[in-house]
Image (cartoon, rainbow, N blue to C red; front, side):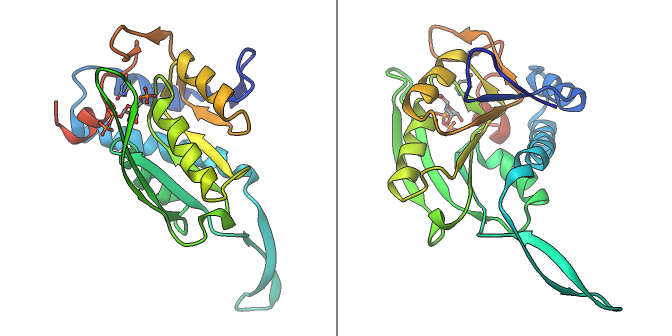
Length: 216
Ligand code: PRP
Ligand code: URA
C-alpha cells in the first residue's frame, strides 16, 4: 500500500496499517532507545520489501536436488547508503531483507544555526554506479542533507539509480528534493505538517540520531 502524492510527484507514502502502528509508537516521547531502534529496523524491513519490487533481475540456471530449473537473481549489486548517523538506525532492517546488498556511508550533519549540511565522511563500495542505490535517512526536514548526498552520489555516476528511503518527511524537504533531484523517488512512512523555527519536523519524533543512540 504505497500512495503517490497529488502535490509531489517524487513522493511515495506508505499507508500500511502495520507500518503506521509502529511509526506511532516511535513518535511517542517515552519510547526508550532500545525499542526505538527495534521499531525503526522493523519499519525499514517492511518498506524495503515494497521498494525492492522493481529492482532489476536476471534469470540463471539452478540445480535442485532433482533437476535443473530457471532461477531469478538481482542483476547488478544493490548498494545501501545510510547518511550518518541516523541512517545507521535503518540498515540492519534493510539488510535483513536485502542480505546481499553492499553498504556505503555518507557522513553529513546539519549546522544547528544555518541548517546547512556539513560533510565529514564519504566511502562507497567499488563501482557503486553499477547497480541500484538506496539512500537511507529517517528524517528529511529541509532536505539539505539528502540533496547533498544525492549530488555526491550522482557525481560518482549514480544518475537514474537512486531511491531515497526515509521515515518522516516535511514539505520543505520534499519540495527541495523535487527541485534539485526530480528523478529521485522519495519513499516515506509519513509526510508531516511543517518545520518549527529551528528546523525540526512537526509533529515529527524529535532528533532521530539522539533517540537511536541515546545522546540527548
Ligand atoms: C538529521 C537527520 C538528517 C538531517 C535532516 O541529522 O538524520 O540527516 O538531520 O535534516 P535536513 O533535511 O534539514 O538536512 P543530524 O544533522 O541531526 O545529524 P546526526 O544524524 O549526526 O544526529
Ligand atoms: N533531524 C531530526 O533528527 N529530526 C528532525 O525533526 C529534523 C531533522
